[in-house]
Structure formats: structure tokens, C-alpha cells
Amino acid sequence: MIEPNWDLYRSLLAVLERGSLSAAARELGLTQPTMGRHIEQLEHMLGQQLFTRSQQGLTPSEAALGLKPFAEIMAATSAALVRTAADAGGQVRGTVRISASEVIGIEVLPKILAGLQEEHPALEIELSSTDAVEDVLNREADIAVRMAEPTQKALIARHVGAIPLGFYAHRRYLEHHGVPASLDDLARHRLIGFDRQTAFVRTVAQRVPILSDVHFSFRTDSNLAQFAAIKAGCGIGVCQVHLAEQAGDMVRLLAEQFELPLHTWIVMHEDLKTSPRCRAVFDGLVRGLETYVKQGHSRMADIRA
Figure 1 (cartoon, rainbow, N blue to C red):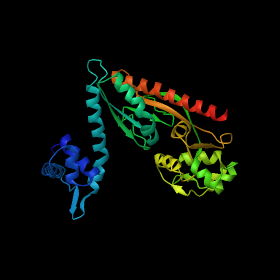
Figure 2: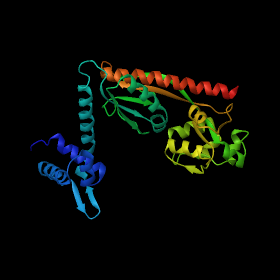
Figure 3: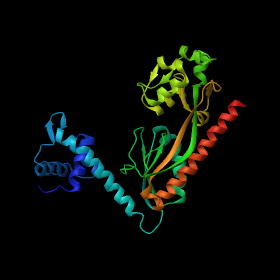
Figure 4: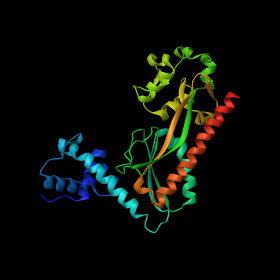
């Protein structure tokens, strides 16, 4: 069997992710007939049907789904090769891919990254804002902002501090429903939380046992959507102190009874420590997030005062 080239696997991955030849072709900047030929050529070389064609579109076969994780590794490796090649000459130029949670990626990092790109005009940023953990060891990302301490020895990790979390509600909600005087009072309020059990939910329940069996009136698996719901006055929820204080008309509740630190690390593969672009971004994220953490603790001190 002749080994298919990367272009064919790239087309396969695009069709799997986009669900149709036309959408995949737009994604890769190809024509739909070219995309179709790629899939047919790959099927011929592998001797297996990869998709079932119907009026509803393309349904991937077990063979196609089995190839997907390997095609994803190839895509990550290809992107990493391009990024590594940009390090020639020792200049801070080229692309750095950063993985961070939704809230950090959308609410915190853009300001830090804007400063980095002002300092290094040839630097390009790819920001993946997802609560799914992308694998830095396999180069799915060059640098990651993690809320759990990494344990792999091949990673460089820098602890930048603990982002303080607290209970918050919009002033408008409290005017209609009153202010809880104790943690027990939370059971009588509209609470914002996750639609399923997570490690974070279990951690909060350990701190506030009454929440272990509480009914959330607003449920979502997105931290960012929860933050938006708190700002909209949907109820009481947990969010970052600094972000809530920046939003305006947000009131910290039960500050003396509940405080949860969100420990934060910047992580990079040790092979990238000599890369000028990755080193510059790593150090810039450390500086920026250390400042952000300090601002959060300063806000807490002001609230208590």
C-alpha cells in the first residue's frame, strides 16, 4: 500500500470536523471537487470506505473515526514544525499557540497579549479558549494556562499565584431578592452553577456543604456563560473577584465565610525553552498573570476594609 501524504489526511480531518465537503473546502481554501478527490484517493489507498453519502450529508465510517486522533496528531505536529521553523535567526517572530480556559482566554489574556504584540510586532498569536485540556506534551499548544499543577517532567511550569474566587450577585438581583446573611441562606436564593458534576463543583461543595444538594436555577457547563448570567442578574454564582469588581454593580457576598483560591500555572514543553518567541510569550504571560493575581487580592483587601 502506498502511504497517503499529509494533504489527504488534512482533508480527511477537515471533513470530519466540518461535516461536509463544501465546509471542509472553505476551511482549507480548496475547491469542493478537489476535496472530494482527496477523500476518494485516500479511500482507494487505504482500501476502505471512509464516509457514507446520503441526503443528510457525510456520515463517517468506523475507519474514518479511527483515523481521526492520528490525523489530529499529524495536524498538531505540522503546525509545530511551522512554528519551530520560525525560530531561525533568534528573533521573536512567528506563531505561538496558547491554550487557556474560556474565562482566562476571553476576559484576561487579550490585554496581556496586546502588550506582547506591541513589544514584538512580528509575533503572531493563536489563542485556544477552551476548558478542555490541550496536550502540551504532544504540542497541541505551545504554552498553556492551567488551573491544576502539571506533573509531567518534560514540562516547564511556573506558578503565578492563586486567583481569588467569591460569591457574587448583581445589585439588581439583590434589590429584588435580598442579601443572604449566611451560607445557609443561599439555599433560599436563585443559584447559578454547572449542569453536571465537575471537580470544581465538588471542591465548592466541600467548602459549602449546603451546596452539595442544592438545586441550581441557572445551569450551564460554561464558566463564561455563568459569569454572564451573574452580571445579568440571574442569581448568585461563583466568579473571579477581580473580574466581578471590574464589571460594576456586582456585590461580593459572604466574603468572610467563603473564599476559594484558583491556583494558576503557566506551562511549556522544555524543548521550547530556547525558542525566542515561546520564551518571550511564556515570560510575558507570567508577568501579566502575576500582576492580575495581585490585583485580585488587592480588590479583596479593599472589600474587607
